Image 1 (cartoon, rainbow, N blue to C red):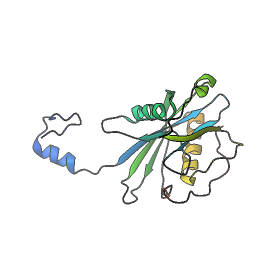
Image 2 (cartoon, rainbow, N blue to C red; image 1 turned 180 degrees about the vertical axis):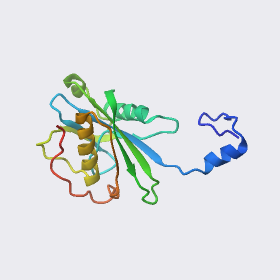
Image 3 (cartoon, helix red, strand yellow; image 1 turned 45 degrees about the vertical axis):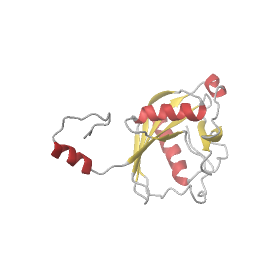
Image 4 (spheres, rainbow, N blue to C red; image 1 turned 135 degrees about the vertical axis):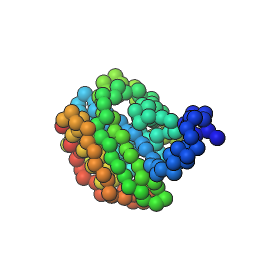
Length: 185
């Protein structure tokens, strides 16, 4: 029976394979915190939920978080950004029926030419925009504002941030009232 991601047998002893199969699993997603030349954050409004977020999505089987981030941004916005580095990891606990999740945020900058070349895929993204610290934000959950603000600080300070998010995601309901500013500088 195959027990390696490729579908081929790993050659591991059956007891070892059974042990690894018994371990807990978590979901993963990856997003891009991209700043334009004016230090504004690129946010997207997915077509499948009522709130805005960073561009990104769920990690596919066998895919790295960085590969996911690049694939998702390309799929959603026809943009292949240069990602400078990992700027944030956020752990989200299980909220049944959702399994626990690790969110990886990569940071980078995009040029005016790249920003002008953005093209939304309507089945993925309903709208997008660039938002600075003094701009009124579109509807976002508090946990998304926290992710954007914290990871922007990590990008700005040359750090990778980690935190555990204990607020339940609720985009399938009414979006939370969000702060009106995102600190990007």
